[in-house]
Image 1: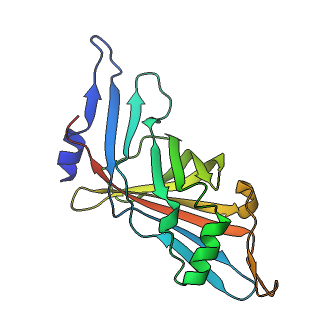
Image 2: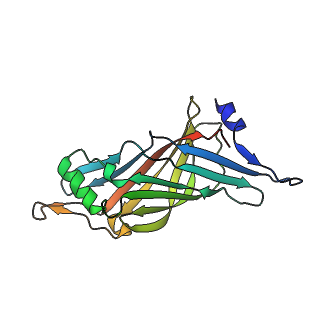
Image 3: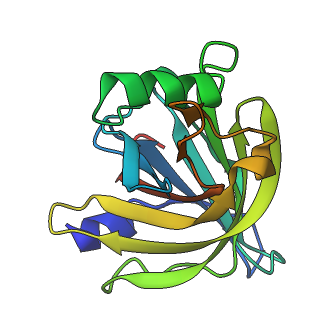
Length: 200
């Protein structure tokens, strides 16, 4: 299947050009997930989206005079209302905190990778540049990423980093008259399950 993956990469060649442009098209599958880990002054918590609902396709371009691969299309939109924190009250508070009704999507928009991943070997780690939109605020970050093919030919694109609520102009909620306080720091992690688009 890995050989099939390499063969099916869409290639756009310019006549007489020794540096062809390669386009990698990846369909984002429902098994993709997003988790946000945080803590309070009492314990820790995890809120997650366990299933992606959408029809996004990523298009990564490399070759010619491009120094690093860039995304012609890198947007993945996840429904904020799908977050589940394991407890109804916490889920409700979390969705209010990230303004899920006013801004119904959390958007990860990939911009570039520091180098072309090698899809034929095990997990490979590298830096990625992307913007993240949460609660009505969009900011660009450098994120630790990894990419790994599995035996069925699917690609797992993972990444994560620590953020602060204040990075997105959000205020952590306080409950029980301020006795339980949610800390500012969050760890956001994504696991995108991708399938090569063989119709290109």
